[in-house]
Image 1 (cartoon, rainbow, N blue to C red):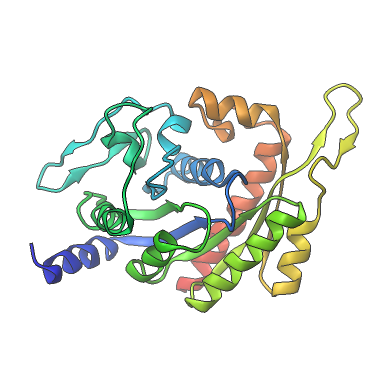
Image 2: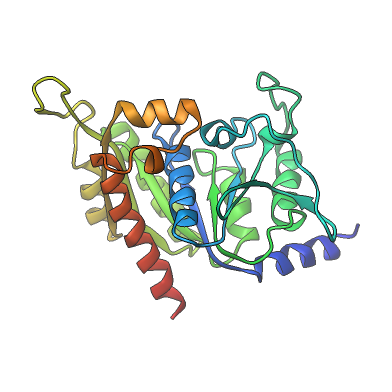
Amino acid sequence: MTKESEDQKVKDNLAKIKHKIVVMSGKGGVGKSTIATNLAVSLSQHGYEVGLMDVDINGPDIAKMLGIENERIGAAEGGGIAPVSVPPHLKVISMAFLLKDQDTPVIWRGPLKMGAIKQFIGDVAWGELDYLIIDLPPGTGDEPLSIAQLIPGGHAVIVTTPQDVALLDSRKAVNFAKALKMPIVGILENMSGLTCPHCKKNIDLFKTGGGLKAATDLSVPFLGNIPIDPEIVESGDSGKPFIVEHSKSKSAKEFTTIIKKIEDFVNDKVR
C-alpha cells in the first residue's frame, strides 16, 4: 500500500468523527488512563457513539480497566480491523489485544510505534463517532507529536497531580499543545486530596490547588479536582469503571461535572 493510500484512509476515517479528545500528561503515574477510560465510558453511557484509542504502545492499560484484556481483534465486515465493542456505545483499540499474553513486552523502536498508531487511526473500522478519546503515553515525545500531526482538530485534556514535580511537567504538556496549535480543553487535577475514612477530615496527601494555579498562570481553563479514592483503584483493577460502579461517590460526581465542561468546550468550538 502506498503512503498516499494510507494517508487517504486516515483522512476518510477522521472525516466520520465529530470530536477528537487527546488525554495527555507531562509525566507518568498521574492517572491519565483512568481519566480517559471513565471519560469514554461516561460519554457512551449518555448515548454518544464513542471510540477509545490506547496509544500507550509500551504500557497499554485501557483493556484491563475495562475488563476486556482477554479480547482479541478481528476483521470487520467491509474490511479493516474490528475494534472491541463495549456496550452500549463504546469501541476500543489497544496494543493489549495484539499481545500473546499480559506479560509480553512491546520492544519497538519509534518507526514501528508510529506505524501502529497510523493503523489504529486508518485501518480500524471506527464508523461514525461522536467522540474519539485518545489515551497518550506520558511526555511530549514521538507518540504525542504523531497524534497531533495525524489528527488535526484534536482537543487536549491535560491530567496532572497537585505536587510540584507533576505540575512542572504538566506545564510543559500545555506548552506542547500550544506549540502545535491544539486547542486545550483544560487542566484536570487528579489525586487531589483525600478524605479520611475514619474522621472524615480532608488530608492534602499530594497537596491541592496546584492544577488551578498552573491553569491560571498559563491562561487555560481549569476543569476541576478529583480526590484520591480507594474505589477508583479497586474499579480499575476489577475492570469496572468507577463512573458506573460508584456513580454516587464524590469522585464520580466531580468527574461528571468535569465531563460536562469538556462536552461544552468541544461543542462550542465546532459552532
